[in-house]
Length: 217
Image 1 (cartoon, rainbow, N blue to C red):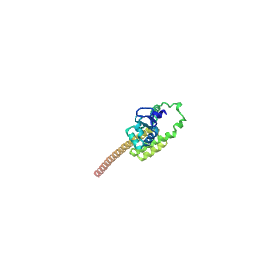
Image 2: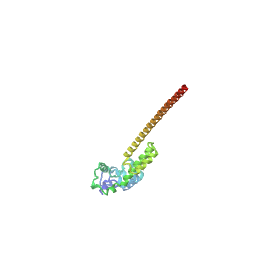
Image 3: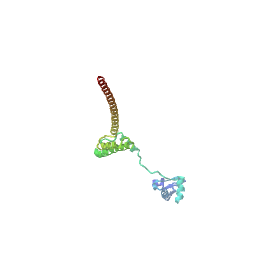
Image 4: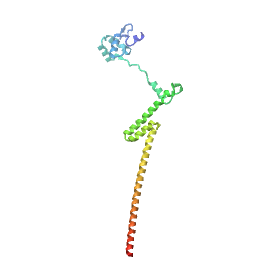
């Protein structure tokens, strides 16, 4: 009864402050709840304007009172998230995670299969990204894909290091091959030069023998 007397939709004191003369505003509370689309408990009516509110017997009049600010829809009650955020920030630091807070075995709390799936998806996502950006070709992608499937890389860092090192090794191999090719070409040119000089020397010797034989005759 106390809530109804001093509250929102029950009996309110009149404008002149006479508490003996009480005004029933049940109709206005019901209309206001219908207009504002909420329950009666969220309707607030100004107790100082009870005489004007009492005269409102239609939805149009109630809308006018809402516009004037004599009838207000209270905000809905919500559960605060501040305490939850505080606990979560502490849990991120490792607090509230001791043996007394744990329920379930280690495998139940964090299944190894879920860890494996998350890790593999990260590695495959990285491979797909590198293949799309032409950092690796499709043959290298297939080799690394199978290595990831076979648990060849512990995490993304190891995979990146492997890709970087393999690129360096291939670059060194190409440089070494180019050096060997240049050396081989130089050796062939040198051999050809020596062979030409040897042929020239032999021709000279042969010509010298012919001239010597003619002089003896």
